[in-house]
Amino acid sequence: MSAVRPDEFGRRGFGPGNAREPASARPQPVVISRLTVGWQETGRAATLREHTERFGRLPSVMHRGSGSLIEQVAAAGLTGRGGAGFPTGTKMRTVASARGPAVVVANGMESEPASEKDQALLARAPHLVLDGIALAAEAVGASEAHLCLASSRDWLLDGVMRAVAERERARLDPVPVTVHQVPDRYVASEETALVHWLNGGEAKPTKTPPRPFERGVGKRPTLLDNVETLAHVGLIARFGADWFRQAGAHGAAGTTLVTMTGAVARPGVYEIHAGARVGDVLTSAGADGSAQSLLVGGYFGTWHAIDDVAGLPFTAAGLRPVGGAPGAGVLFVLPAAECGLGEAARILRYLASQGAEQCGPCMFGLPAIADDLSQLAVGRPQGDPLDRMQRRFGQISGRGACRHPDGAVRMAASALTAFAADAHAHARRRPCLASRRGDGMAAATMTMPGLRTDGDWR
Image (tube, rainbow, N blue to C red):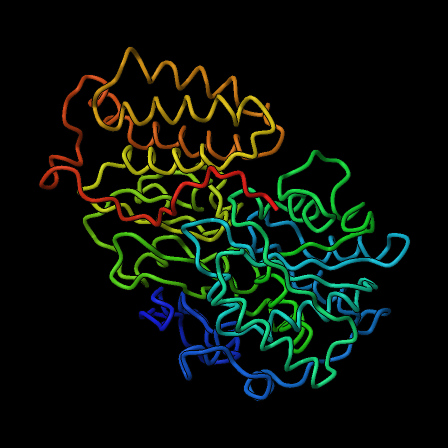
């Protein structure tokens, strides 16, 4: 079981594993170990020697033929693990076919406050991520590579830099990796924001097109992938597409990392079969049986009754019928005695503080909706906040300079649907269902960083 324990960083620990389970082991358990092999053996980042002993030497990339890395990644069915879920092989093929030398950017920002999977991966298996960067760079014909981390995580930077230095001494990577600390803002991890920052601008999203794969860093075609995605590339290069597909269920391939938090007995980061049912993942983490609701996907995610999603695969296709998506790979179980509207209001206040201030929806729309939802959550509405929010949702959606307002509106709108009875009770200044299930409103449990309003974008 990839249960998690506190580690030396004061955060959550990260799970263990048994490498390369045979296909004959099916039906498969929810939890599996591929990326997470050896994570609990030492409680620290694997050295290059330990990494090589676990996974074998880094293979060379063949640029042409049916065995090329790009074709292997495409055949494996790997999709992006950063939230968008775009087919990785297609993205690599597009960058490789463009004119001129390419650039590879690994996104390790993880600005989603509810997620810890990328931190876990970089803190325990940095060489697997660096393998993926090196292989991707060779495959797409890149002459430079970058790894972007949040500026607030010096503890993570130190381990990654040690791994980079080990590889430099071993002369392992033909394309050197430059590690950057990017301003730690919610929208700074968006792909165009990273490209803009690497080009000398502020870490704010820019208009598209062009997309980074068309014209990115230095106006060159740029492959920009999440660090977990690139770690999977490092394993596919070693073990092949068929091996990758041995894991997964309900039409999904491989494994994926998910952060379990909230009312669960064993919170933390789990590696699961892609496509595992939501209810099975909750059971693996020891979800509280009295809990009735959860947030799927993180701060840009959606709220749902557990009964409505428990039988669905944790994939974009599986969750689409209920309007959900895995997003950043987060499942937050709301404690039974906690008001979901209160939790949603806290999230929305944070998101309203994190806009890039490039458009009206971020500067005025999100703060207005956050104020309405806060009034409703505390049961002291002024006028009709429910009606105001519904009107403002329509005025904001699709009109932002980037997708930040859309994600915030989606989360807020889903809260009004999932907690409709509570919303109407609060609107009438009456206690909600959560207060009846416990001794008043329980303390909020979701990770909530401090609000950033200092304008630090460089």
